[in-house]
Picture 1 (cartoon, rainbow, N blue to C red):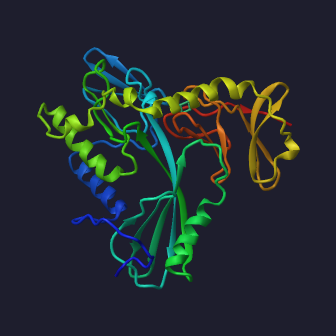
Picture 2: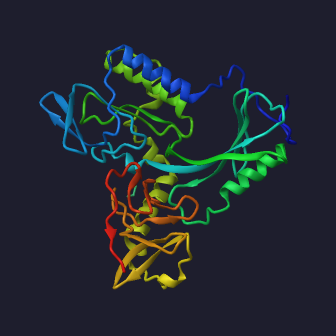
Picture 3: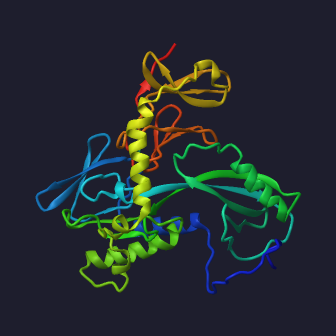
Length: 348
Ligand code: FES
């Protein structure tokens, strides 16, 4: 069945596959367990240290795992130096709504070419027929009103089926390299046997498979015909792109100018369910007022490299405009590259 929207023209990519990512992840886990791979859940890694010819992967509670080869696959790398990925990558947030529909849906996945970007795909089983509409992306941490993003996606879903019902909605975040090509391979020439796969530009399932193949070949000492395309230590991205200027401007603005500016908001001006940075006793404080009027205050300075955070009024989080770290309104670190929580502030 054709996409029930009017379009001027389209490019078709044949031989695409669509599958259930949960089943896929379960299959991966199953095959790892069959090979006696150990999986540690709820074990946050906070550092990586060289130890003789090996590496010590240090976790939050002080335990460590020692390994000859390490693959940093934590979305945005949590190690800043060497590597300097924070100079060559940013994060982008986007949103999805899943609506239930009685209509017979099209097969296939569609994406438009203009802004804002919308993409469509289907999911579900015999009991429920789901249409997924994704899009409304923006640079993470950008100061803008996000409160309508899910409504815009829902409006788009209703163009396909006006009677559809919203079942689920969620936000997602992706790493984007400055030249839009993923970084796959050696993490840094100063850390042999440490590998990285990141900057998948919203094509994580596809690009992570490319990364897995290249990194496995490198560890086994084999050539891979695609490794040169993705060389992770490349600097061309930094040299050639105007976006590095934007990234640095954002960091400079956040580190210097914003901290000197005195905002005139007061506690009274924060409405229930919203957050703001205010100045209290000469200090900047990030305050969220919940629906009942209870206040939660944090120091609004990113625990990654110190940029000032901005309030995300859609997901009730503190987001960093520099490299996309995100924190709950209570200051808990929820998105890398930051690995530490924000400082909480007690207020009356
Ligand atoms: S994410 Fe790097 S300074 Fe915030």
